[in-house]
Image (cartoon, rainbow, N blue to C red; front, side, top):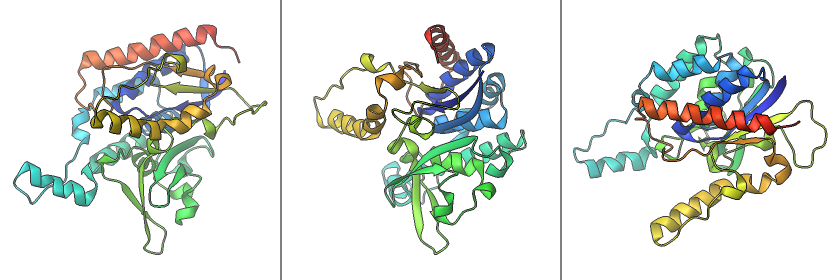
Length: 296
């Protein structure tokens, strides 16, 4: 069975998607097109490039995730003053090692640019905070004077995964020395189901399945707000998710696998083997439960 898939962002918690993919493979469900934001973009790119769930698991087994974090050297000797470097570069980590790893991994499947993939098979969402808009990669690249077929898939993933203040934003120039700052797609849309499925759209070429790292809509708990820190966190989360939450109506929710990942932070790059295995098992179990009742 062929479907289109959409994967939400979620940082290292997206290891749960490996379990979800394993369950889908056992059921004979394959993806025709895939889309994703941030860590979901990584998953989508690996799927389109031809990696199986087992191969994706091996990729994360063979590397220490902390090796992907490359802090910029600071001229300041004191930790507090080193934040000045982050202030100037707008990120704790350069993201160079992360992108280099992606380049090497994708080459194993003969993928370098979008021209190496079937046309329209992969879409990733990033946020252009200079111009205040969504960026769908590779579709929107001509707006920046880039030829989609010649653009690096690894660079596009890096753009979609640039968690603000964690990774340095990617600067893309329009050919006239004007730079646009591109950051994590989750800033504007962490779950881009809208890429493939429009609200109230009756006829689809094939089913669209979504995968989110959160509880089902009715199980989402109100945020506790008792101080300024909790208020700020709640405000940022609302800004980040309100668009997607409004889009996901009840009729769309029936096509979404909700995987309620808890106790793991988005940027926890020091996961233990037990934590990794627990995430994968969680993805397997919730996808299996979903498929038992899913009808298309």
